[in-house]
Length: 115
Image (tube, rainbow, N blue to C red; front, top):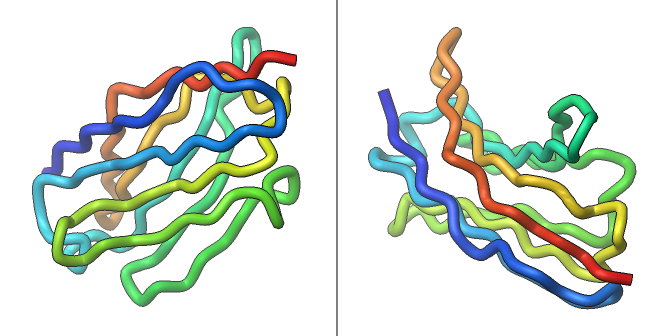
């Protein structure tokens, strides 16, 4: 198993930036992939960005060109740099780790973008 601890959420004005962090309790090389998902009130949880243990990344269309996922192997931490934030980016952001058929989730961090 793995424990995930997120940080970095908060309140920001539209057009601003935030950087989320997700610290894993084990080496990221032992995790197939890590990602960021988000869930807005009344909506389903959706994938934002994902990075595999080989470094391959994928992004949801609605964040391409604005968000960047990255990884610090030495710190077992995955980041989500969010630029040009929009009010519709407001949601709880969750870190996710894929361990074969098992999924682990962080507790979530609130991101609120004011217009």
